Length: 164
Image (cartoon, rainbow, N blue to C red; front, side, top):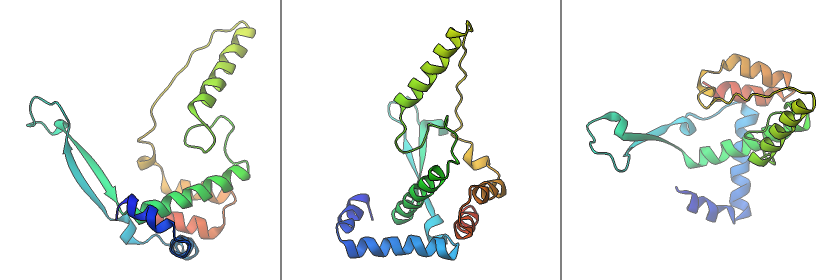
């Protein structure tokens, strides 16, 4: 089912409460169903390539179950709220958080640079891409961090199963 179908379903409170019940059951059982982990890879040719003989001329896209993605998003929002409410997120963490933006990052960087100038120092900036960090993250360490963040054991058990 596509997003347009789900948007229509969400207008019905009974349907929406059933989806919330599924998310709650996943957390309470500490289990993320294999059904939601199944993915389909679609290979799409990149536009304006002279030749399509090279694999780099194509872009693979991984498609996950739409309901699973929706539940993941709801759980991520809950998790972010709980962790932020417990002051477990460093104040310099700006990316991927609700109510934080590129403007916030720019303001923070400007403040750091100008604070250095006031002290007569020069400032350098180093930027790097950590988009491939998550696949290499130690899953046991992540579960340990979630436990240290004070999350309910049901939630940490859910994530331990989710990462398998």
